[in-house]
Length: 302
Image (cartoon, rainbow, N blue to C red):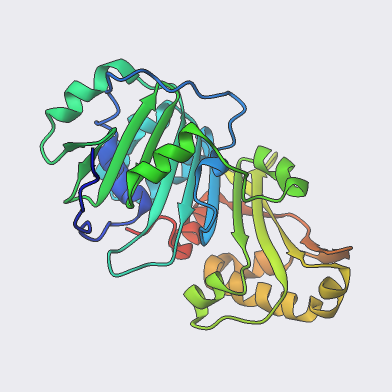
């Protein structure tokens, strides 16, 4: 069968905003299920050239996602998140067609009962091994009871990676960070991210920036909070030493941009140099501040 040319989708309303429309979709498929290993790294299913990679465990996704959406969309997404143990997003620079993302949901979903419901839902049309909703700017596939894929891009390459995952974009030495409740990995942050946020790139030999958070053990206010830390991973030890002042300045600008009212707390973190890593101590942030920072990153544009 020859592939048919597809017209570009209308602008997506943002990753989670668009994803909220698939909650009622995840009732379906009649194809042979794709068996997913319990040890599958969802980052390995995402494209290798993303601007940023975000991973949250199910509890964190349920806590942060609804606050980033209008009430109706948050309620629509809730049934899907209730069944999700891990959510990963791959994000790219905004384009003329709006937010560009791939999303991997791992959990336990009613795989067998959904194709019928989706096929009969207004706005959704069968497309290859998935469904497309052009008005929402999203394609969805439910290849097995443990996996849901959603994308604002072409579905076929995404589905191919799910069937044959590649290497994780996260360096092996940082693999343990994937066990945290939240992990944001930004490869070469002084290129794509700097261009996206500040309008220009910088010639700084950084391999990546990792922001990671764990649920706080104790909070002064009683509200949900997270302990946030950061690591700049440099090309080598010399680069880490020479560019340390630049990294500190970059962290100052990023903290002011992402965390706004909580920036002072974030900037209180102490950074230490260890080989080719420039790493911060943990700072406690309330969950809404973390959600707002992700929103400013563009991960959850409304």
